Image 1 (cartoon, rainbow, N blue to C red):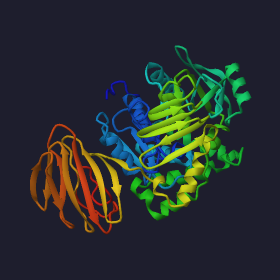
Image 2 (spheres, rainbow, N blue to C red):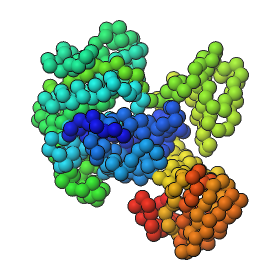
Image 3 (cartoon, rainbow, N blue to C red):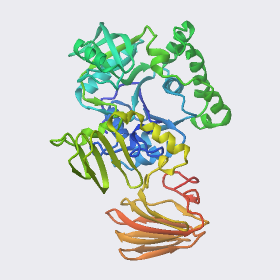
Amino acid sequence: MDTSQAIPNLHAVILAGGSGARFWPLSRELSPKQMLDIFGGVSLISRAVHRIAPLLEPGNLHVLTNERLLDELRNHLAAQEDIDTGTIDFLAEPTARNTAPAIALAAAYLLQQDPEAMMIVLPSDHLLEDGPVWESAVRLSCDAAEGGALVTIGLTPTHAETGYGYIRAGRPMPGLAEGELRVCGADRFVEKPDAETARRYLEGGDYLWNSGMLVACAASVLSQLRSVGRRKATPDSSHGEIIARVAEELAAMTPAEWLARDARDRYTSLPSVPFDKAVLEVSERVAVLPVSLSWSDVGSLLSLEKLAEADDRGNVLVGNILDVDSHGVIGYSADRLVATLGLDDLIIVDTTDATLVAAKDRTQDVRLVVEALRAAGAPEVVSSRSSLRPWGSWTLLMKADRFQIKSIEVLPGKRLSLQSHEKRSEHWVVVDGEAVVERDGETATLAANESAFIPPGTRHRLGNAGDTTLQVIEVAVGDYLEEDDIVRFEDDWGREGGTE
């Protein structure tokens, strides 16, 4: 990416630890909402990276997630042809404690690298218009942040939305304008309003959608946490000092040490507080930049309405859906045929291993389904049948007591790790492409309709020698078929140990 217009000392922190429970079954714990590519074929986190990377110097892009998602996100972004993950700093938060501890930890970490660091905090799972207005908004926000302000980016409402928080813009701040953009004081933060209040906000013109984007000097973030903590204006803001102190203690360590027991326990002891409530709603140094950009937080499955035009009965049907005499239905199926008959105001989402049917006015409660499934130990909460890897992807087609069948796709020039399994054998059948198969030091090249057998304990590796995607069917047989039955000996992505 062209970074010739990079903003000096600006670091981006993309918050990517969410599980996207309200987007189940499309979203899972190991493939959450930010990794979905149904909105235009590009995942939401990839969009976030592309949107900010041209404004950053190399090495100034940081993805903050959780320990469980660290490899998954790295693999996901590595699979994107136009993203160089070698320039991205992946960080794992010791445990999920909401955005105040997360942003404080990121600020303290950046100050260890650069005392002049400025940070832009970005969600990883939003849709946001890119282009000149976005770039101008970031640059103007940085100008305001250099003066000590904590700048939130507020989006001009286009309708009376009840699912977003709002910010009331105050007076313009002198000397902070570019074209039609004006940095203003932030007079008031409001939680999600009812329909009548949202309508008044829209008509009044001085309330903005709270986008969750923040621009500030890293030092200002920590100093304001301490300042509001000493004032104890609200119960949430009273935690500011301890949050800042623990963040600085961890930042003095390496990111790998954040996951050690003592550091993890220290961080876990922090209150789970949103940054808005801990700082922004009570600090006197908060500003807002009103911007008119197309934006959505993709907060629920109702966002699927954006994927297609409604028919004459108000139905939005995406994929393999056939409907007869339904009204106001959102239907999504990427694979299996789903037929609906005589339904009203429902949402139906079908995936290869799970189906959700819900009332449209209950989409914010999908997390209740996820909680019930988690309590029942349902594996469908954790993962889907497909998984992206830096070398390509695999999809589980069938699994029984002593065997499973996968479809494996390997990108041109890529290869899996050199590995072995103790409890299962594998049989690879090449469907399309040219495979390079290594077994205990011997290498063979296989074409379509040819196969290779991998006995238990054999050191083996699969690679793609061709210039098109390699497609392989893998049949694994054994008493234990889980992904942790693996020993890695060599790996092109430094993943020795762990699961494939």
